[in-house]
Length: 183
Image 1: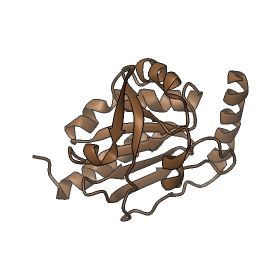
Image 2: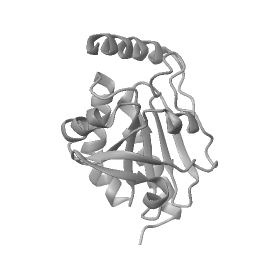
Image 3: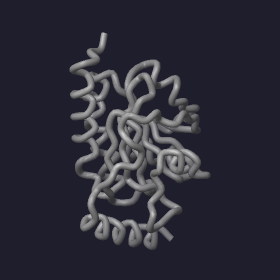
Image 4: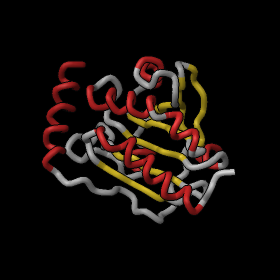
C-alpha cells in the first residue's frame, strides 16, 4: 500500500513538473474559517483558524500525504524555517487527508515537533480552499496560502514540487510586514 502511494505521488510529481502552477483561491478573498483536530510534537489539540489569526498571519499549506517523498521534504523545509516564521509573527499549519494517528508520528519525525499538522479526513477544508488534487482527488494538492490576521488571503501558490513553498510564503510575509509591522 505504501509503495503504491509512493509510486502515485512520484508520478504526480513528474506530471506536475511539466504543468504550470496555478492559484486556488484568489488573493484578496476571505479565507474560509475552519477547525480541525491537529497534532504538534505528537500532542493532539484543536486548531481553529480564527484563534490563530488573532495572534498574527497564518501560513496554511496543503500536502498530498504524510511520509511521501515530497511531503517529507516540505515538512523538513517548514521545520527548518520555523524561526523565520515566528520572527514574522506567523503560525504554520499543514493539512492533509491523513488520519490523526498517522499525523501524530509525522508531526514528530518529519515536522520535527516545530509546527502543527491537521487531519482533514473528510476533505471539507481541502474543498473549501480548492486544494483537492484533480488527478487524484483522494489527496490534497500542494497548495500554500498566507492569510492576514483579518482573514484575507494575501498569497497563494500551487505546485506539487515542494521546493519553493517555504521561500515563497516567507517572501509574501515579508512583503506584507512592510505595511503591517508587528508589535
